[in-house]
Image 1 (cartoon, rainbow, N blue to C red):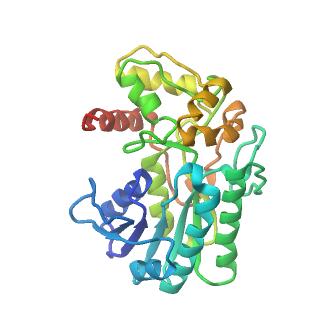
Image 2: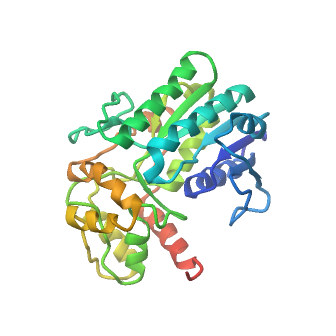
Image 3: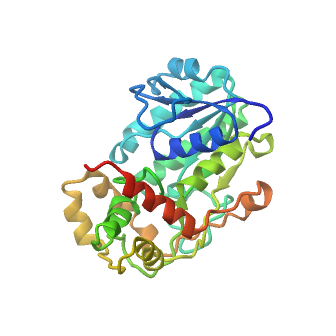
Length: 318
């Protein structure tokens, strides 16, 4: 529990924004969540929910005024990133600069490009050649340009493909893996089963964002979220999930032909194909910086898988 209550504002009420809220509330802070509709959903009653257009910098300044920290967890639809993500971030940077809060951005690893199996550290340069990776690179560079120019104080927290409570249709390990296991169906995985691939638990992602937003010594830097067993393969993780669900592990890897076919009907899957390289080679995140300097530790898979399965089991029937 925090000694002094602060006001923290979370932009976005999706799975990641909700994970940040849970950790901030656990610390005893006042939390305001921002989305376009103002709808509360399943958020706790003591959490304020405010409607705002985050593409409007004046609106961003209004809803973040007086905040200690602002957490950028909002994003457009996956297939609309090139057109809609950069203007969203520009408005958020301008608005938070006006409100004089610190801005903590949730990022992924796309901006790094194909790292050819090298362990991913915060010092790696942006080298993306894909459309979405290039967008992420420009956005990250703009964020730290604003920090260096003295417009506002920022930090970035980077997670790999995530899973956890609330992450269903859009998550790689969501409905097609956790949901499939609980239904006794084959788990749909991406690419080869036996290549190392780091996965991030939403609880750890939210905790890392909240920790960075609470510390002056974390500003101006990139931080990788700590992840349990970062060299795990999809087969190994899928087996852990199936065992916890009480079923035999069965897999249905989605290769290029199936991704193309499914992409005809689901834009997000169609857009994923350019990122398929991240599953074809080892993608292993090195989080020693956050573990050493911030004291963060990853949640063991036994716990994170159990919590995720519990959420999937408790969902209302579609």
